[in-house]
Length: 403
Image 1 (tube, rainbow, N blue to C red):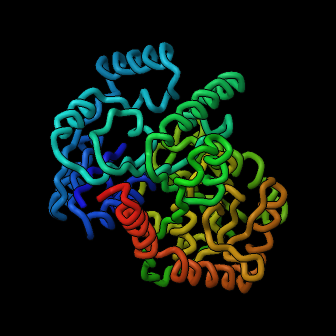
Image 2 (cartoon, rainbow, N blue to C red):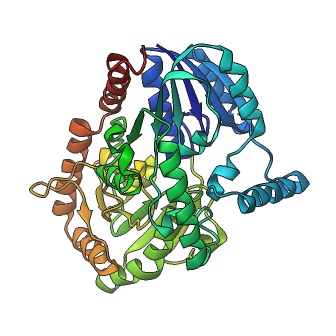
Image 3 (tube, rainbow, N blue to C red):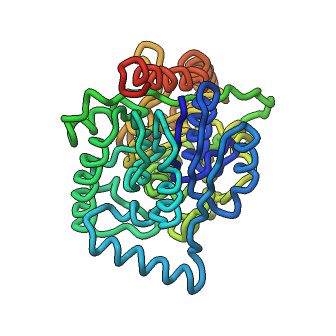
């Protein structure tokens, strides 16, 4: 089939964000079976990733986003704010609105596409070219007020969050109805989608994403060390890091006084950087998160907001690390109660208890890590994710939605 993919960012297997990595796996899978044209929002840092995609035989149309610094950035922010105030769509859709991308899509309108596939619901706000079928990858269903936060460094009032949630519910219900299939990563997101827009529930397909199983380097874990990994442009990671440093870590240190925490991830805002100091270290952007994950005795992912799956949870599991997380952090992950692959709790005391118990028992965290790595090998490989995605394409072709 002839497929047009419209992406909110440049897919890249070396991307700084989980979204770029997952999108790369999606595009690579589709391109293995179908002819792909990609339209993506880009920045100057994406040059290598764009060349890699073109080398794969993908026809790439990169639309560079407006600058966010200086006078041009100030004018851009004012324009986005005005568009948001005068409209009814969520702020995030205005942030990713670029007229040049819409012009590119209009220019491609004369071509014949079997499938148009939007990666991220911000792309659903555009007027997409005609096609026999439309597919949306919904990376994160936004159902609660906390899910409406756009900037983790500046949390709006409860009233503002509730108002933005209303925008999200109306927007999501409207755009989901425009697609023949909606791919989500977790049963939790599928349930939220059905709650918001029951009329499209039969179009939803749950497809947990996967990761590549890395080679273990033999790095020896450091006693009593915790690691939190996440990019801080994603607001749920900001909230999780603050909860971890302010409430959870003190409870852990009451049981394990030597416990210390390393926070790893790009773009930590000032509110997170302010937590640096004994016993918390903050790295900022790093070339690879693997050394930090391998050196940690326990990886902690105390996420209380946001939908979708957590790539860093799977990456830690793939390295055989003991992971403590919340129900949201475990969403979509293979974790049977009879042989758990994660420790899960949704309050500070419960998370601290799991962490303290694991720090005190090398045998227990080794066994948990071994089950975690086995679960990734069995249930969360990238080829399994690709096979399920291609099955969705086959489904729309066989059903007659796309020829």
